[in-house]
Length: 143
Image (cartoon, rainbow, N blue to C red):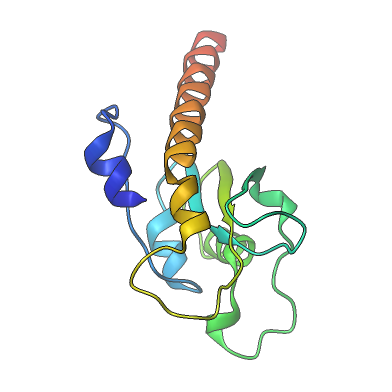
């Protein structure tokens, strides 16, 4: 997906596309210093057909409780931890997730349902960018 967005779409100069196959503490490094972030990933809710898209703000995810290792730190916990360390963390984080049927099997390619959602997800990313650029303009006008 990152390759599709980075190469196939003409994105504004202020937009950075990163591929980050990571979790836990490493998320803070990617998020620090950014104002708005859209995380594109897979998810398994078990309530939607594989390939379905979910778009929601980060506060819909629950923070990690009862950590036994640093690998268990999820996105909301990494954001809060970064803030407590004094890092400038994003004011707004949204998630665009594609429903997957299997998150445990490692593959070198996308499953057919997830691959089928890539173009629609790319359109959703463009929509998110447009909405957030509009917010920046209106926030700037209010100042």
